[in-house]
Image (cartoon, rainbow, N blue to C red; front, side):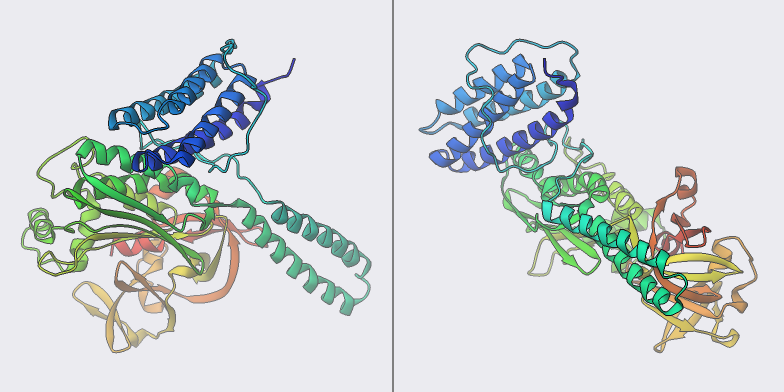
Length: 507
């Protein structure tokens, strides 16, 4: 008898693929109910799910997949909106049954009508979990499908590295050869590092393909006609980042449906690669943000305040809501707060763009700037009060050498002048609680731009730039809001990685 227990994870992965593919195909079928190719696609996915379920001994699941296949067979000549809703309901039941079947300790017999259960047809599906009855729940990506050419590159580099290490051992007596071998070794290590990181990268579509069903269900619930488009699903991100960005995107899409679009409109989910970052945008062509209402809320929370546009843009991420109606979909104001917190915790930035309502252009655009990988980043090592810290290079705009006379005080705030403009500064020695009076001894200003705010972080000196391996901190250390992670240098010493965004936001 085949030991099926060890195949459960593989079954779950394939079943989730098929269910997401069924969702996507059914959404297409809802728009083109007489397209026979889409009908064939639906039947192919259902037949494959039926087969692999029967192979695993999940009779109830196999029976239901068989019934779904039969239902699709009977609607080849078109279907009503109620019929489509029924099919979506069956997919929901299939998804629940997948989980309960895997967790069940005993097998159930397959329906005798299930034929050719061993025959698996080839499907072109995406690897992700579902977004259905609870669209805020996401399965973590515990495995990544890797192309063989990527694996071959890593294997080849490891072989070269081993050969080079042998050469290094033999060349210890010859200094010149020794140095050359070390240089070659260094190049190989960097190449190996690059290719290993490539193995962790996963297409965004593994998250994106959950959203057509989400938007479709929300549009039906709100009785709105919405055209949803996805671009850039082939852009790759580290799987650890994919694990957390699903929740923020759900919040943004729900807001776009509930607040952005009034009766009909377009929502676009878009991604593109820019150097070491991926830019993900959620756009709608609705009326846009009601900035006057946001201003009123700001003044209520900050009596006597005269907010700038930048202040208002930051304020909407604090949990405020301008909606006069609280619905099941949104309206409590907590969604954007969660979005910013989650994105910031992974070293990203989120911004909102929406023109005033008296302008001709309309709509709202949320832009998430995300690191490609959390495993290795480029960093600037700095010294503060004799201790070493790492600053993500992506947060550094420029370095400026300063003297005691360059810093002057404006009210309670230290200020320097850069390019004839005043820039507020803060001594990292104070932030790190190393020396409260060390501002005047600082010799280096690290200029950074966060949320349209330019700030100078004062340190003693810059040590070097290098790639560092990022190690997570515990929740207690993270809650301090000063460091985001830690790295280990070549000499074995741990070095904290500075959370620039958190420090600047408190200034």
